[in-house]
Image (cartoon, rainbow over all chains, first blue to last red; front, side):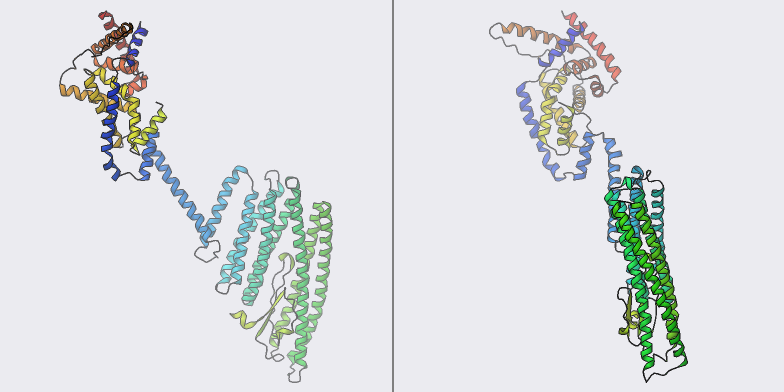
Length: 452
Length: 182
């Protein structure tokens, strides 16, 4: 029964209770005319875009949601985007900033942000090598800063800025070394990518090279005592960079199965090349020292031999000492050349092993070559230490060479592996051109120029 | 009309002030609202006036950027208020009038069938109009306009359970009246 009643009611849908069709049409036209009349007034205060957006959203979502949730979230997101993009922008602008400059903190903050991002995302994928890669990049930044400061003529308190930068660099290198150690011990936990290995190696080698240049610059620009301090510090960092670069090779060789064969070979080849360069450098440096000593000897002999020269007891003693030193230097040079030759021999063997695919044996040979290079640089350092007193003696022997205070000779030992750094021979010579010094390993500069 | 297309039209009306969108909304709802009004008032003339008023008020309401959850809900609410205003103005109960349906006595015996249907409609309408206001409204909404219980609850601003109970009672009463009229 009730179904029939409901049907009766439903039937009214089409029945007499409906409006007349023509009324519906005319009413539509009337209504349109009426509402269009209200429009021109409205158009004048037409709402802004954002107002429209919120109103529009409020139609599709509950109004309370739009105004209490969506809008605040959108505002916060906008602020976050602006904040991070401006921080990024500041980091970009400060890329070339140096320690002590206004923008430098922004540069470091930018690096910190980058690291934080990698750390957060790195936790997800657990690839620590990305972090090592970043630290290598930062280390390169520090090394570049050190070099730029060392080379700069306008920066004043270098002896304060450089040690700070060197200590930052050491921290980065220490982090890299620690992470590489972790990778070495448990390679399966932290899988490496071929690219990151190559990248870290490249960057650490560049750090080494930059520090080498910085050392030269420091020797050229500052006084003797400060040179000693700064160059010792830079040399230490150079050692760390070199150790890190070699550790990369070890990690790569230990992880061969996880990396592409080409990448590992390339890393080993780069290491071999680096060792070759180091050996050549120490040989050249040794030759350079030898040349200087010879030249000093010749110059003094010439001066003393001149009829106008006044021979004093001190100058005679100086000559004697010079002869001894010359003999020592000759011996040292010979030993250094021996060591370098040994290193070259080892490197050749490493090359053969690397080509035959026996990378771990190649690694051992590179390590041995590095030891030879290290010994060579130690010898070189000792040789320079013996040469230095001679120069002091010569400084006293003003009578022998009287007209020569305007020239300063600096020998930079660009010794291999960065184990040895700079020694400066401040020497007074009658004529700079008599020194056949190897241009790549030493420099002859006018004393006046260095004071600029 | 789906709720999404209704929302889009609503968006065009509220944000873009688009009269054509409002016209489309009018097309969708005019018959429903008209019937709803018609069952509450005396006759077609009053129903026409009130329906026109309802749509104009709805436009103004939307224009003032008030929150609109459902356009049909808004229309019914406005219609109810308009009717209440009308009652107040008249200060009397609405007169119960028989619908002035025209009867076309036409050819080929179809007129008889038409007449039967029309008589049935007249009976139903007259029974509806004798129901009390609350029952009439709820029956109209549920069975003629085919609204769902939650929608009715929103329009009448009552709980869903109350709506069901009222609906049940209204249907019972409606049946009684129909039977009495036989």
